Length: 97
Ligand SMILES: [Zn+2]
Ligand SMILES: [Zn+2]
Image (cartoon, rainbow, N blue to C red; front, top):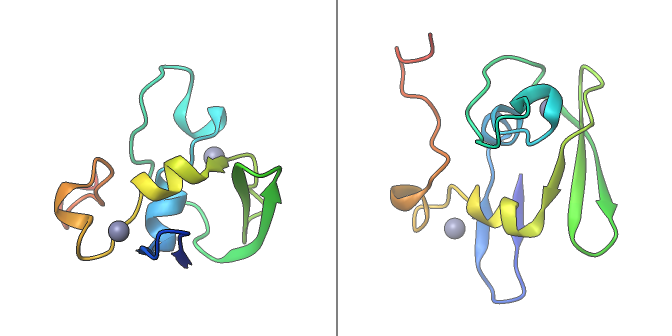
């Protein structure tokens, strides 16, 4: 998925990143830290706006409890400019265990 921001920045948000870093309590527990959770259906079925500050994403397996604030989505950006500094990298090949 791609998003263009008011400042013209064009974000690249791979589905794998969005799903893996789903911020809901079911995926992330209550530890307060966000970590990559592999698995789940990566087909994005629906995007819904929550107020003016966030989006919810509904995945192919019906999972939709993650609320992605725009601030969070911006931090998840994997465009060539943001990727080297991202705090939310995809696990490298072979590191998925
Ligand atoms: Zn989730
Ligand atoms: Zn970016």
